[in-house]
Image (cartoon, rainbow, N blue to C red; front, side):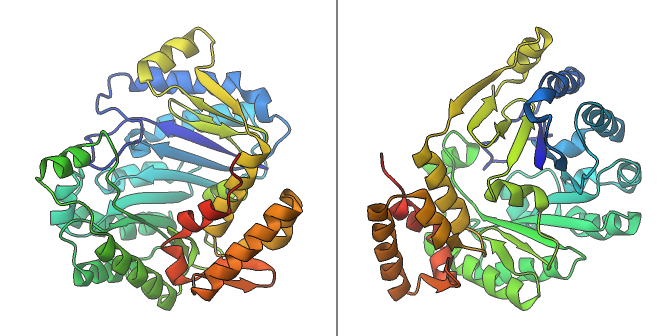
Length: 376
C-alpha cells in the first residue's frame, strides 16, 4: 500500500521559523488547485498497482482551502487511484481557520483527521513566532472539532522557544493533554537559515535557542506524555495506543508515497523525486503537461543510512537482524561495537534484537545514527 501527500503552499502570514515552501499571496490558489488536479492525473501510472492507504493535505496551510476544493481534489484522486482501502485522510489546519461553519463543511468531506498547528497556548509565544492565531482560538478549536464529529485530532507544540520556562512548558503540556486529542507532535524550535527567525537571532534582537533548556523541555515532554497515556512512538510524535499517524508511520517504514504540488517529495522504493519549489513555475509546467520534478536513484548506502536514521527514531527501534542483512560482516561488527559503547553510556538498550534509544539517547538520535552510517 502507499500514501498520497498534497502540498498546499499558501499561508495567511509567514511564521518566523518556517522554511517550508509557501506563499502569503493567495492570488494563484485557484490555478494551483487546477494544476494539482492535472498533476494527479498525469502521475496515476506511477503507483497504479498500489492501494492508497492514506491521504495527507500538508503545507503551507491546507485549511485555507474551501471544503469544495478539498472534495474536488479527493474526487480526482478517486478517479485515478485505488482508494478502496483508504484509512486516514489528514488535513493540516491552523486554529484561526477552524470556525464552526468551516468544521461543519469539512465534516461532509472525506477528511477524518486534523493536524492542528497550535504550537503554544501562550499569546507571547505565538506573537514571537508570528502565528496568525491567538491562545483563545487554540483552546477552542479542538473541542469544537470533536463536537462537530472529527474526533481524530493531533496538535503540534513547539518547545525551546526563547523565554519559555520549564514551568511555562509544563503548563502548555498540561493544557494540551486536558484536551480531547489522540495524538501530539512536538518539535524543538530550530533556527533555519534564510528565515526571519535566523535574521532576528543574527541581529541580536532575539537570543539563540538554549540547548540545555530545550533538552529539559524534551525530557519533561517524554515523562509527561508517558504518564498521561500518550507515549512517544517516534522522537517527535506521541499517541494514544492505536492512534499513531498512519501516514507519517509509512514514511518511517520505508513505504511508497506520491507527493503532489510544488515542493512535494515522492518515493517509489527505488528512487526519490521532488517538485520545483515555485508556484508560478509549477503551474506553468503542469499547464504544458510537463512534470516539474527532479529524480535521484538511491544507492544501497543511502537506503541503508535512511533505514538506520528512521528506525532509531522510533520506539520499535533498529532491528539488528535486518541491519545484518543490509551490510557486510565488517560493517556489522563495527555497528555492534558502537551499539555496545552507547549501551554502556545508557543511551540505548537492546530488547529482543532491537536497538531502542533511552530518553537520554533520544536527545542524540540523529547523531547516534550518523555514527552507524555507511560512508562511501
